[in-house]
Structures are given as C-alpha cells and as structure tokens.
Amino acid sequence: MSESRPTREAYYRVLAESISEQTLVVTSLGNASYVWSNVCDRPENFYLEDAMGLALPLALGLAVSQSRKRVVVAEGDGGLMMHLGALITVGSVAPRNLTVLLVNNNIHAASGGQPLTNTGLDLTDLARSAGIEKTLYVGSLETFRAHLPSALTEEGPSVLVLATEPDVPPAKPAFPMNPPMMKQRFMDALGVPRYVPAMFRT
Image (cartoon, rainbow, N blue to C red; front, side, top):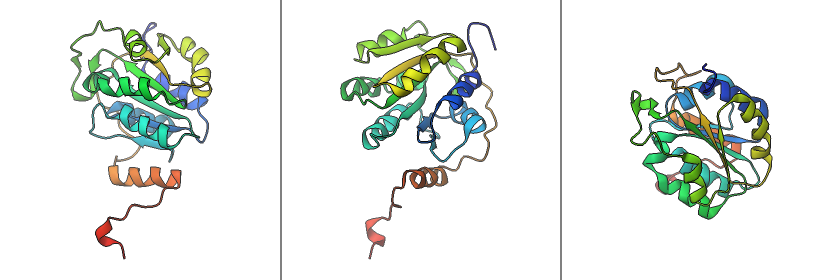
C-alpha cells in the first residue's frame, strides 16, 4: 500500500467495521466483488458479475425499493464512465439512503489495466454537477474513517471518491461466483418471494 493511495482491501476493511447488519452492499465486477467477498462475505451482499458499470444503477433501484435500509455501492471509475447517466439519475432521484464509494484507480482493472480515457477527470466535481452535494475526495484511510460514519447515517445520497492503488491481477474470491445462487441468497436476505415465471404458475 502506498502512502498516498490505500489499497481497495484497506478501504474495504474500514467499511466492514462500519456497516450495520442490515446494510445492503453492492459491488461491481472483478476485484470489487472478489476482495469484498474475502473481507466481509454476508447474505446482504450483492456481487455483480460481468456487468461493467451496472452496480450503481442496481444500487439506486435497491435504495428506492428498500428505503428503510442503507445501501452502499462500490463502483469503479471505469464503470461509472460507461454509464454516466446513472450518476445523473442518482442526483435527480436523490435517495436518502444511498452511499456511493467510487473507486478511483484511473484504470479499467477488470479488463486488464487499460488507462481511463480521461484520467484527469475530477470525479468529485462530476458528482456535484450531477446534483449530489455530499461528495468528498478521499485520499487516506484516516480521512475515510473520519467521514464514513456520517456517510452511512446521514441523509444522502453521498459520494466518497476513494483514491485507490490499482489492483490488476484478479484476487481469488472467497467462493465461486455463481450469479443465480448469489441472487437468490440476496433475495432471501431481503425476504423477497422467489420469482416464478408466469408460464409455470398454477
């Protein structure tokens, strides 16, 4: 871990110490999910596999539909650039229970470490221009520890842009990522009835 840019895992360990049992956590593809599964696996996690840039839209939907629960999403800067409309929609809908952790490593880590098309883009300014006033650039674990509690308890939405050391080699997840099984585990944690296609209903 460099002095100026903590690793993803270091940020995650602080997050794991701070969330409540009821907090819903959505993580984007690759190491965003793999590392979190090793740090804090729980039924209330939704690991988004092979859908780059869609963690934030999913978390937004959860925040609206599960308004009594805090929703935290770990999205990457590359994923955000693929679906900037999601950030704009967050600013418009303004869910009070949504906390966005935007991992800012300036690369597309999940696809091999290619640099972003614009590594100089100020993501905090971008979030504020989308209408999200509670936005903060975080460059150290001390700053993260100081500001995370309020981001998890006060009315949002809030965005914490986490300056992060790149982690291109894939981490080994805590278990094989099976999307249907992970989806069902998450639905069970929410108490959502199992979906049965209409053609199979009696």
